[in-house]
Image (cartoon, rainbow, N blue to C red; front, side):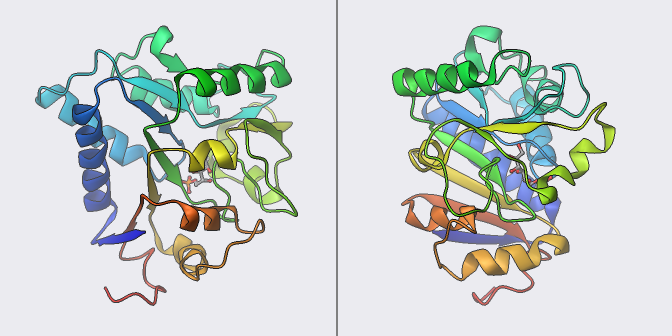
Length: 242
Ligand code: F6R
């Protein structure tokens, strides 16, 4: 596992965008799994700028929505759908046939099966861009006695229900819809983005390299190709030399 510490959120985001762009150049029909939330927004903006300014071929890029708030209407401004439409799907003009996304209006169990079938047939994920949850969740793989390998309906923790994304939600989510740990660990490459002083305790806990279902992110230590991109504030409690 490689830790790269950048000066601030801006430089972390530029680096992340560069890594995503390089992955697209290397494999234009790659399957990009994208987290939502505050951390990756600037990286996605920088990626979109790169795509506009350079000859980044996006004609075959496939995009997979990592997770979604169950129980919210698809047009609720708090959905991961609204986020991805705004930050990636729209600006990168990803057409519906190359965008694989949880539908909150469909039957949730059927959605898990549908996403699972897609990954079995067209996976694995080439590059997963992930964020670190306040409770160390990955996607909506929530801390607990056990974790789920595949796409599943998650019982959301109070910590996840306090996520700032939900401040604009029209209603409270009833569950999470998310890829499972095996789906993520089968990714060819993983980028974990961690930014801000408020994530320093979580990143320090993650760095301890103890693997526990109570710390879902810790399972990334089992993956051969993970890059943790953190800024100085998030890395302020790390023991690794900076
Ligand atoms: C969102 C997601 C979550 C977030 C995590 C960090 O799609 O999967 O796991 O990545 O909660 O969120 P931020 O970046 O807002 O701190």
